[in-house]
Amino acid sequence: MEAAKLTIFAPWLVPFLIAGALLLLINGFRRARGHREPPFIAPKFPIFGHLIGFTQRRFDYYYDLYKSSRHEIYTLSFPGMPGGKVYVLNSPKLLPHAQRVPHKISLAHVDAIYTAKIAGLSDSAGKTFAEYSHVGESKPTYLAEGLSNAYSATKPGPLLNRATKVAVETLEISLRKLDQNETNSVEFNAWVRNEIAVSITQSAWGPQNPYQDPEICRAFWEFQENVPGVMFFPFSKYTCARPYAAREKVTEAFIKFYANGGNDTASPWVQGATNVSNRWKITDLDKARLDIANSHGIIANATPTGFWTMYHIFSDQAVLQEVRATMEPLLTTTEIDGNINYILDVCQIREIPLMKSILYEVLRCYANGVGTRMVVEDTVLADRHLLKKGSFLFISNQSCHLDQSSWGPTAHQFNARRFVESKTPRNAFVGWGGGQSMCPGRFLAQNQILSFCAMMALRFEARPRGGSWVHPGTDTRNTTINVHPPKREVLVDITPREGRRLGSWRFSC
Image (cartoon, rainbow, N blue to C red):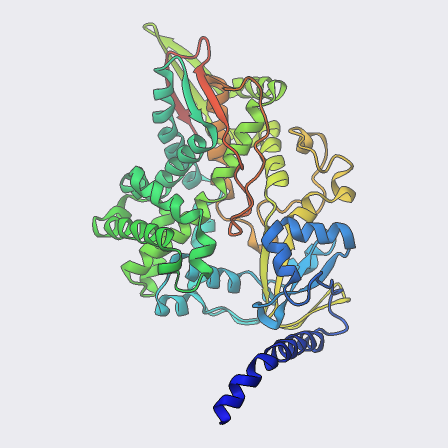
């Protein structure tokens, strides 16, 4: 009889239970939100409104809210996040206040969480990775040692020069093939992406670089384009089966890399990272998995940055001609017994103001993700905004990069000469991160991308197959990267320039 009553009355209870649960969630969030916290922007729909908005607009959603509210920092309710909320920082003026307290507003905590998920680390390696130095402590940690190694191996100097030469010499092998044909028809993004990925990984992992195998490259991109699913879907081995399997395929390739002694001929950065892992007793399997996270770090944002830099050089004839003119002084031409030899000084290219300006403008216009930090203790920003321990802070690149008070009325337009014509506004450019979280590989990425663009501009023409350049839009679906690739294909014909088809190319640094 009791069972029968339950069956009869259960349908009547369901709406009341749902309503009660929603009220508890709403009231719980209101109680959790302190009066000194950043202004709260209410969602259009209770509880899940901001989550829906983010799903539809991705990182653009945060900028949409900033444009409509003009809050330098605001609070959003976000189910599933610690405390059910996130803070979003939009103001270049407020940014330094967050950067000055890296032990309170921490990137390291975020790196540990995301690296373990991206790589699929074992529990023991994940635990090692998640050990931090707390405020006032100086104990060594795996993460700190790894970052120190990365910064020292890729800073300007002989090691960076050597890595740059390896990368451009790898590119030269591919460009030499283009010289052999009157016309090379390619999908521009796919071609640039592959060339940068292979060359930059060659400079890292050396002669036994797993990405020399096209199958491993394809597996990496299968995984890379679906990273959010592998990281966050429940039972991702089954719910995100293909990218999960692709990650395992790349892992196997790196296991072979270590088994065959590939580390012995790798770059000082990779050798140093291996030494750090050995000191912390990281297994070969977890080393291989960490190399997937490292691959994500050095490839995922560099490749779209390379595409957009190349696109904006070749799609504007005035810019292309100016690039060629600025590159000529770095090119030495000699002729011996009828053989023409070109020597390009690739390590000076990033110092050419126009080249640096184009690359930085690409990052300003296309690096529109967020910088994620974890608040590890209650912190007051600028004496007015309380950030609660355990919450996440998102730093909106887009709000900083499109801020008209910093960049002027043309903030929404691409200007190749912007960083030549005017001084970079203080704290408004976060293309490489900021404070103590600057990207350690930024110098290698600049050298490699700009060398590639210079080699292409000096030697080839690239013309759109439809006759005119049409901006392909940006694909913002992958929320684990900051620089987003084009949304549509860009079909081009690459042809050797008159007078530059013959000859051998070498590189000084």
